[in-house]
Image 1 (tube, rainbow, N blue to C red):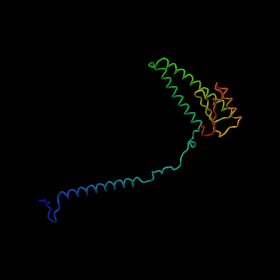
Image 2: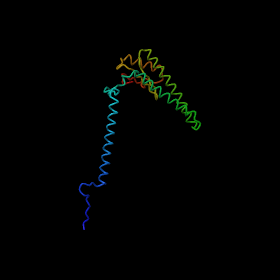
Image 3: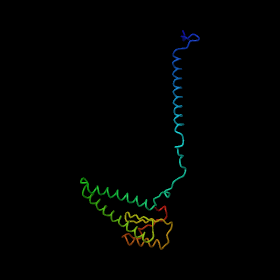
Length: 182
């Protein structure tokens, strides 16, 4: 036989259904209350403090620091970091003697190269090539100047000044021009 569910008499509500509906109404009321509170808080804050996002792109040339100065700052930061690392290596007693000697030789070479870079920059600035930056690495010299192009005489002057201040041959000296060089 088939079992039938007893239906409550007409006009009477099932107690379990009544609880479920009550909880649903409670959740809906709570959600409505939270949405109302959030809306009120946003309305109270107002939009006067909100700044619209900028739609303009800012290029590196817009910064206050000239390109050669920022490139020089990066060079100096890297130089200081390398010198500090090598100095720590030479002072570490757990490092073998050969490694400490190689680190000391590298420090000597880096200091010499750095002094050459500064000397060449000063000589080129006195010759009228400013702003500029000089980078000496691995037996090659790179001179970065801001004009978009140089006359042959200007290039020859730069090469002769660089050759006079270093033992690097002219074939290993590179001149870069324009803002992109820096």
